[in-house]
Length: 128
Image (cartoon, rainbow, N blue to C red; front, side, top):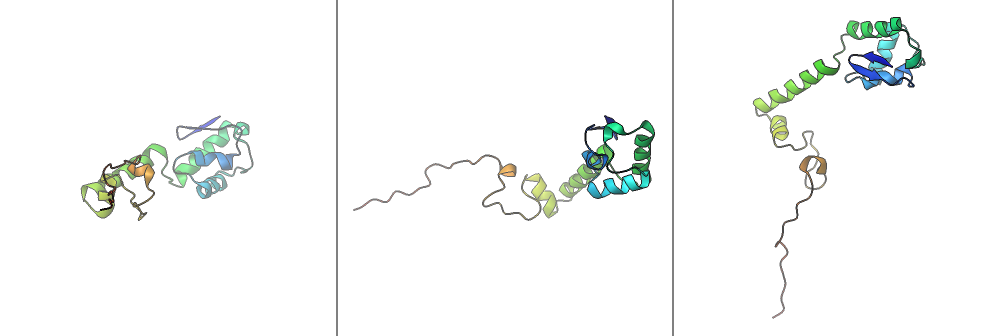
């Protein structure tokens, strides 16, 4: 197993498919990193040498890709800033509601939690 940016990449995967396990490295960034590091994308992680792993780390630094802890910190600071200035997106974060325009009358269960039934709402019709 290769350890890059504090993440263990699965040994049986191709390196092109394994790099996106790192937070901040998606499929397109993985291809760019491998081009800069001059590594075949079809190589399995278990077949990488220490030199190749070092070249991958260097390529991530060279391309200035924010990964793992640094990126998570930046994202959380951005969300906190939105909440502090009380903009619309910040208020949605504060209330734990969807931020990007999704509907909440139905759906949004992951954000709103389990359904709560309100009793006594149904009116009873009586014949007179």
